[in-house]
Length: 285
Image (tube, rainbow, N blue to C red; front, side, top):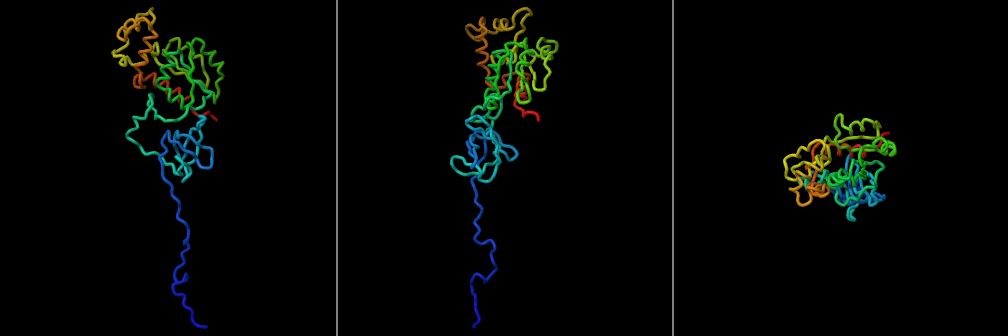
C-alpha cells in the first residue's frame, strides 16, 4: 500500500475545538427610565417602569399592581424589539421631569390600586393642598387622603380604623406645638402602626409662604378674632373682589398661587413626606 498524504485535509493542522459554535447573540441596550413601556418575555410582567435597583426592575401594570423582575440579557421587549434593560444614565434635564413635590415624574404610569393604609388630614383645605403638591406621588403610591373634620374625635377615629402592620395610618395635624389642644390629643394615641405629625402653624393657610401672594409675612391677628376672618380682612383686598369677605374665594386664590413644594414652609413639607414614607413602608415581619 502506498504512503498516504493528507495534504490540507481536516487533520492537517490543530483541531479547532470551538469550530462551528455560533457567536453569542447580543441585544440592544435600553435605559430603564421611569415611564418606559416594557414587557418581560415569557411572563405576565408588562407595563411601565417605576424604579430600578439592585438588578431588579419594578413594573406597574395597567391594573395598577407592581411586579418585580430580574434584569437579564434580552429578557424584555420594548416596542416589540427584544432588548436588555440597563440602569439609566444621569441626566442634567432631570429638573424638567419632577412632580410638584420634587419627586421624579413617571410619565404614563397608571395609579396604583389603593393601599389599605390611609393618610388623614384635619380639613378640606389641608386635603386640597396635599393633593396640589403631592397628588402625583400619592396616586403612584396608591395612598388615599381622607378628611378628619377636626381632631376632636381622634382617638375614636384611630380605634375605628383598626391599624395593623399592613394597614397603617398617617395623621397630619395643624398647630402641633407644646401644650396645644392638638398636641394633647396626639398624646392619647400610642400605636406602632399610627404616626402623627404636623406643623406649628395655627392653620394650613399659614403653612403656605406668604410670598406666593406678594406679601412678606402673614399679619398678626388679635386673639379672640377668627384667624381666617382676620387674614381675609387684611390681605384679601389685594387678591381681588370678594376675597376680603369670603374665605372660600381667598383660599381659592391662595391655593391657585401654589405651584410646588418650595411654596410651602419646611415644617409642613417635612411632616407630609414623613407620613408618606410611613404609610408606604413595607409591613413589618
